[in-house]
Length: 433
Image (cartoon, rainbow, N blue to C red; front, side, top):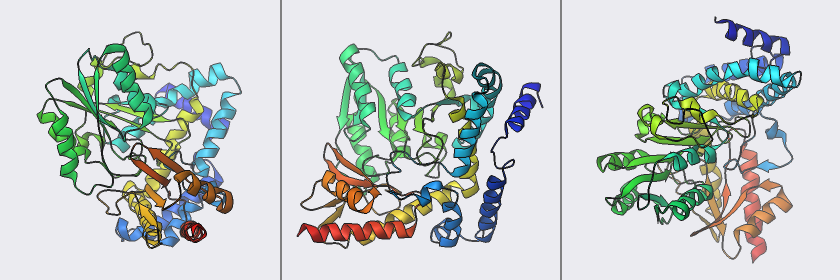
């Protein structure tokens, strides 16, 4: 073991690291999860999705499962499991013993192991992975880093994330690029229809297609791989917003066929708040300028995108423990469970008079996020009633042609929580009359 790595491990031990191998509670929970996983190993992910005994073990690993508020806005940001909370606290305690020493000389040595873990999860080489703070930062790095000139065209959608839309509009205002936005009416249960819309928008001046893997408003899964295949044939690059897909859907980034991919890690991966990741295909790295200054801006080293100045090393190191927890479940199991939870409440809600969904319930087109509406009430009114009377946290959405309340469960969500949601919607519908 290299001396720097040996010292890193030694310092963590001295600081009382809360990684599961060194912490009694963490070790107990890890053993419980391992035993639960062993019990269901003969079952398919779809069968495990409905095994409440297994998921009760997972729920016990989250302090949020005992909250007085039912959190169904995990599409915004998700709580971390307890072992990640404790690791973050312990790292902060270590840092405050001497920030300039423990940050730059000790915890800084832990970035490469975290990069390697992220790379394994992403199915990509470590030298294609940059660690940053959120999907907005990752995607803006590419948006502003591309050498686009006046007249070059970018294709996006009105239903993309607002921060990303504003980034393209700012480049259009300052530099004269042309930003064309498609307009989709979701849900759409036809991949080819979506692909055709992007293809029809391509002109000889089109340089980039921006596509959101999972539409954050309503959870539509976009046919990214098919869009990338089409775009490659037309000589157009693709940037994918994976904020709501990474750590939930079972895929490897290179298999999508895109050129660039940005995501947040504090959603379905349950990493500490303020963590993100950027993936760039190796041969594309030299041509992307860093968002923040670097001494070698045209180098092929992915680390040039990490010159962020002083940031939270504790938060960054918490990513590794979140990946450990994620891997103890498995991506496919997580995907099927979250989809099962979405369908559990959504199919019941759909039976209520005046209730409609903005999301397909077919597995190909959605997973965890679902939009719900009640005739005669605005999203803000529905969300307000859910929170004020029932202590259910959701997200009201009014954006372009989308008007609904976004509901997003996670692996710590119980069926009892979702039953309460459905009963609450039932009462709101009854009060409306």
